[in-house]
Image 1 (cartoon, rainbow, N blue to C red):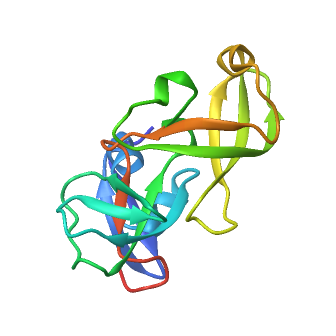
Image 2: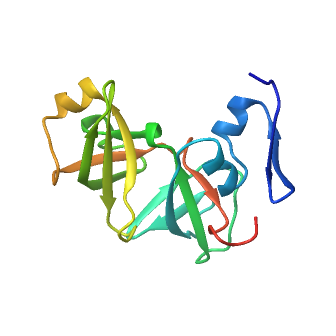
Length: 162
């Protein structure tokens, strides 16, 4: 694998970096989508630096992105970065989600989770198959989830200039 990657969009360089850096710290929503699966949540910037509101819940996100309080922002997190179940309870970014759909994919189970305040858009979450089986829940169940503040990214709203 290359030690440097250049991600281009419509002839414009979006990001240059190592593979892990581009995957873990995408600089734009385009790069985030290009190098893997990503969930996007519509949010509103909080009056606290590094925080945004989704529905009635304030979520802390990675440092380095600032927006005026009340302005629209987009939060992003990868499916494998969402914690599900008792370990998520009490986390800084803990939400309650409903399992809208589940798909057994061998070593992991992919969940489609609906969260209040995110409209009809489901979050995709990948959970180790054994860990999901241990939860003892199925479609329709409410489960606690945590969106780790170190992996929850913030961007200008999707669809605006980046």
